[in-house]
Image 1 (cartoon, helix red, strand yellow):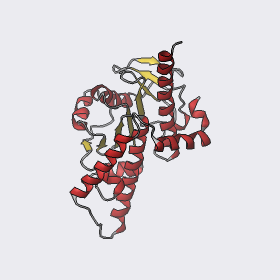
Image 2 (cartoon, one colour):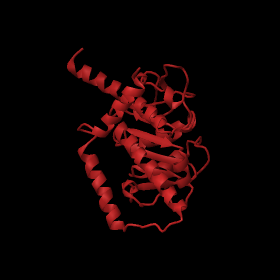
Image 3 (tube, helix red, strand yellow):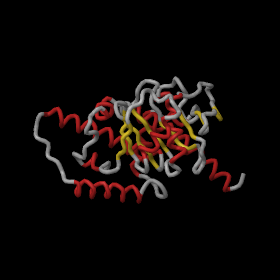
Image 4 (cartoon, rainbow, N blue to C red):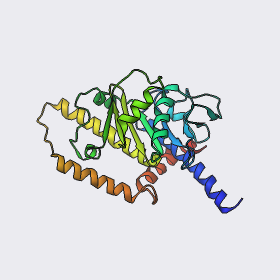
Length: 254
């Protein structure tokens, strides 16, 4: 086996490891929803086939080895556990992977805080440093029922546009990432933004707001950090999460 083949194989294994890690971390931080919601990642850089969790498995059960490979038409390419995939998950994730070649990972949650904010007419507000990351960078998609209708894919993609974050109205949250690590960190901040917003709204106190110019400045600061880390360079925050997981749930790589 030559060096190029070795590197290619290592990249494929890393994609599986990172996606399995994201599933475990989402469960660890309490953002999973039984066997529902999904995280997907391209099986190989630049390729259309993507990886997703086997149907019926809780996030804490996902490993690098049991991930399912599926194509954009819904054909299962590889299914080690013969479990199949969730059709609603396929609808959402396939639409974005097909329309956005810049997106490597798509992460969708139904957390209590995320669902609550998705039900607010005002949506997500730039009230603190966490939420300012998403200022002007959040799309909205109206609820159409459980995502089983493939025709919804066109509308979902049109609403998402080129943004990295989408509020699925009356449903939950969705983020895109150039890497699995970027998508996970983005969702972690989005979740904390939702929790903080709900805490502020329930406090009964006067909320101190920032102007759009400051919110935009902060969002650009986040983007600069992201451009310097996590794609061509190492991502220190994601590496820290991987160390945590290897300590507490080392079987995710199996």
